[in-house]
Length: 180
Image 1: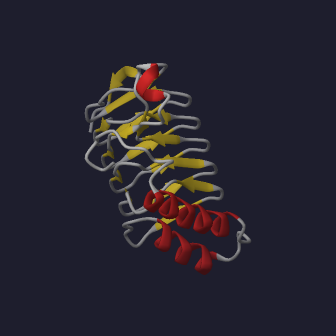
Image 2: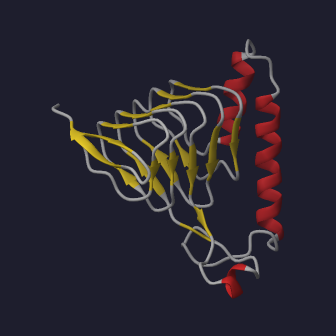
């Protein structure tokens, strides 16, 4: 799975157990009272593979494995963050994620014969420093996003994004450069 090769997620018992463990922790996190900040942070540290000191996840938050997610310092995600982390998902420092955003590392084969057998594969996602995601953004597998990027609400990011730009649209395209 982590090598980007075809695998059978639904037929691999170890992967199934890992997803159930993670989804159970997400369930506990999502059902805590918002004022239970210490318990929330404790659960996030159990879910997410690597955190720094300052971060915040609004509820609900959903992911598949958790251990494939790394977040930098000063990370914030608004409500309804979904991360399908069948491959690594890495966020730099000072990342702000608007509500209803999704990061999908999982893909399915195009050919129906292989796809119908349940195979899938995954490609990592990497997000640089100082990146702001507007609400409803979707980032697809294999995408690398540079530093100092602003992504407009509703964008679908299907290809790599260089440093210092504003992007928007479906598929997302560079709207303008940012002077830093």
